[in-house]
Length: 270
Length: 306
Image (cartoon, rainbow over all chains, first blue to last red; front, side, top):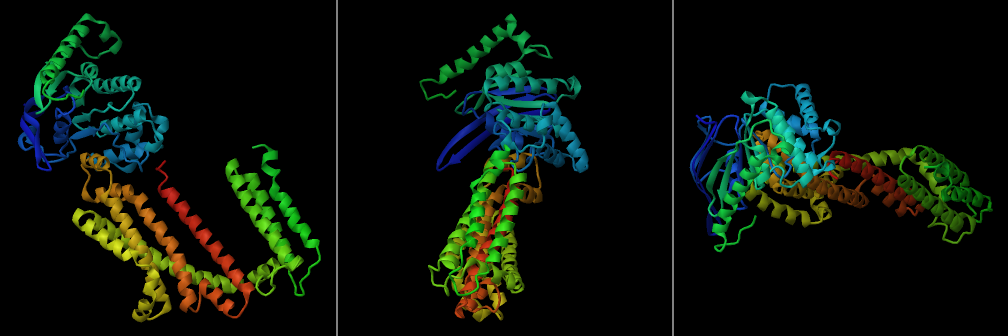
C-alpha cells in the first residue's frame, strides 16, 4: 500500500455561473519516504491538488487515501509550508514554531515545546533571531521559520506549496539545499513523505525522487518521471554530470511539448 | 549624544527669562503669588535636567525639551500680560501664580473630582470594551450575522451618544448610572464595529495557516482570530476613549454634583475664573496621562506590527 493514493480526483469550480474543471481524473501514488514534486504551468491545478491533501478543500469526485484512509480534513499527520510565509505575525519565531508543535503534540509541556522550537530554529540557522517577530525577518528567514515549524511538528507527511516561489534566486538555492540536508539527514527509513509543488524544473530535479508533470485546462497528469540521481546530492557535482544535463534536456522537451500543444488554443502563462 | 547637544539648549534660556521677569514690579493691585511660578519653574527645570541626562534618543529629547520650552514661553507671556503689565481684564485672566496657588489649595477637592470622573469613565469604558469584544467575536464568526450587525452598529453608533442623556435620566435612577450608561454606549458601538470588521476580515492566508495546523475552535478564536483582529479592535477602543471624555465632562456640566466638568461649571457660575482655569488645566493633564497610558498599552499589544 502506498503512503498516499490519489484516485480519479476531479475538482470542478463554479464561480458566478462559469464553471471550470481544475483537476480531471488525476491519479498517482506516493510511497512512504518519497520526495515527489508536482510541476506544471499556472492553472494546472497543482495548488488545488495540494489544498485537497491539506484537507482544506474537497474534491468533486474521486478521493485521496493516506495510509488507506480517505482525507476528512486537516490532520496532525501532515505539515504544510505555503508560498506565503504563513507565520502568525503576532508570535515571535520560536512561538510560531512552538504553536505548531502544540497542535500535534498535546502532551509536551510549554518548556519542552520551546526547547524543541529552539533546536529546529538552530537547524535552519535562525538561533539568533528566535525572539523576532515575522515583520522583522526577511522573506527567506520567514520561510526558514515555516520550514522549522513544519519539521518540528514531526509529521509523517510534508506538503509544500511553492515554498520558495517568492524568494530571490540566490536564497532559493540556499533554502533548497537546507531542505534537502534536513530531509536526507533523517536517514532512508525515517524520511518524511514530501509532496512539493513547484513550477521550477531545476528545483524539482534537484530535490525529488519522482516528478509528476501536469498539464493545464483541465489539470491532468501528463507524465510521471523517476529522478535517477543518487542521494545525498550535491548541486555542484550534479550539474556537471552529462547524465544530469541529458535528463534535464529531456524534461524540458517534455515540459514544452505540452505547452506547444496548448499554444494556439489559449494563452499559456509560465 | 555629546554633552553639548544634551545640555546646551534654548529651553534653559527661557527658564532664566521666566525667573528674571519675576523681578519686574507687579502692576496688579491683588496678590500675584509669583513664588508659585518660581517653584513650578524650578521643578520643571529639575525635571528637564534629569530627562536630559537619562534619555537616549536625540529626537525624543528634542521633543521633550520643545514641549517644556512652549510651557515656559506661555508662562512668560501670561505673566507679562497679567501680573507685570496688566494688559488683560484681571477678573477674567488671573496671573499664573494665582492659578498654581489655587491648584495646590484645592488639591484635595480636585483629587476627589478626578477620581469621580475617571471612575465613571473606567466603569463605562471597560464594561463596553469587554461586552463589545465578546459579542463582536460571536457575531463576526457568522458572515450573515456579522453583516447585519455591522449595519445596526453603524446606525446606532451614528447617533451622538450625548442625546441619550435626557432619555438616560428618565430611565436610570442616578446621575452616576446615566453617565456610565452613556459612556458605555459611546464605546460599545465603535468597539463592536471594529471587532466584527476585524474578525470578518482576517487574512485568508492566516486562516489557512491555522486550519492546516488542525487547530480546534477555541484556539482558532482566541489564539488566531482575536490577535489578528486586534489592530481593528483598537481603532474602536481609541474612538470610544476620545468620545468618552467629551461626553463625561459635558454630562457633568449639565447635571452632576461632582467631577471635573462640574468643578469648572460650578466655579464659572460664581465668576471664579481662577478655579475655572485650574479645572481646564487639570482636565487637560488627566486626559493626556490616560491617553499616554492607553497608547503604551496599545503599542505593547501591537508591538508585532511594523
